[in-house]
Amino acid sequence: MLKSKWIFVAVLLCVLLPFAANATITRVVGLGGLNTNYIIKDASNPQIWPQLIADWPNLAGAEFNNATGTWDFNKAYLNYSFPNASVLQVSLDKLPGINSMFFNSPGYTQLTTVPNISDPTSNTPASKLSLTWGMPWNGMKVGAALNISQHSFKDNATPANELKASAIGINLGGSFLENKLDAAIGFETVSGSVKPGNNGSGEDKTDGSMAINVAGRYWWMYAEKLALVPNVRFLTLKDAAKGANGDKRTFTTTDIKLGVGHNWTPVENALAIFEFGIDMNTFENKTEPNGGTAATVKNTNNALPYWRIGFETKVFDWLNGRLGAERNWVAQKQDNGAAPAVSPEAGFSQTFTYLGATAYWNRMIFDVQVDPNFILNGPYFISGQTNAMLARVSLKYDFNK
Image (cartoon, rainbow, N blue to C red):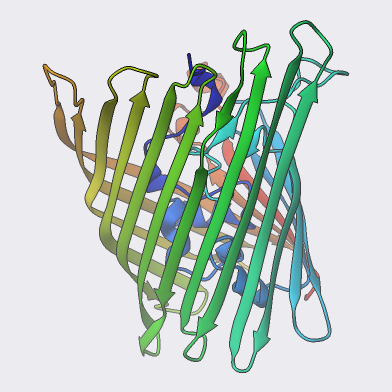
């Protein structure tokens, strides 16, 4: 039988944006959630549009996360600048397993992790190379991102255990029309196999796993302090595996986001944002037993519509404060396919709120996101709850200052 642990795919792509691959995602989240990245200018934009790394030269930074209740130093990066105005970002992260460049947290593709001989309990990372490059060119910007992950293991047991996996992703981008239009297209392929120790005999392996991602936005300054930012994202993922006995399983995900954002700078050192749009996601799980009848379960999880608001302003010379919120009108439906078909449907509203700040100290910049449980319960001596005060921290060092 095909091992279900082979491939894990999250259903909710409405909040897809890799945390560990971004520069100041803490600020982005604080203004209204992860997808705020599509409608503001921030050093995390190059994860979507690699050419925009050219706008952020001479930076170094780090990302910290407290999502699991334990602080972790997830990533360090450095943006090198060159005489032709090109910028190259080299980043090192601690992502486990084989992860897609488009799906890290909370949704991702992950092939089974590899035992670490010196530390069998560790969650061994598989990332090997992560580069993002961009430069101005003939009145435009061009850029590319490359991500390579790989791991392997084998022994001489009887039967021998052997597994290997790799992921190669390329994201190409360009900015046109006086750099008002940002566009990018990315492709990734994931391959892997395990034999025969985990399944007794034969070989389990991937069977055409791949992802394609397209993103674009247009920055329209229709007044001195006002800008509209229409944006679009199309993503399709096929995550497939074939078992040693011929069984097949295919996960297919499609996500389409259409939004219109608005930026308003009412006074100096202040920004107010708003976005309205739709995010349509379908997820299909198809199982094909060898010699049996195929079964398909299809889920839809649409935000019809979603909207977000956010605001940040200077509080002191060394401190900015921000808050944000997003709301989804969710429409869910499941088609179980098999008879008798039980196809539940649900409609509800989701609201998420965020609070954060940015502190400046010479060339050092600290972005923080407050843990909502800390706001709700207060410190330990009041509530008896051991909630962390912060959920995310981004540290950036700006050599340009």
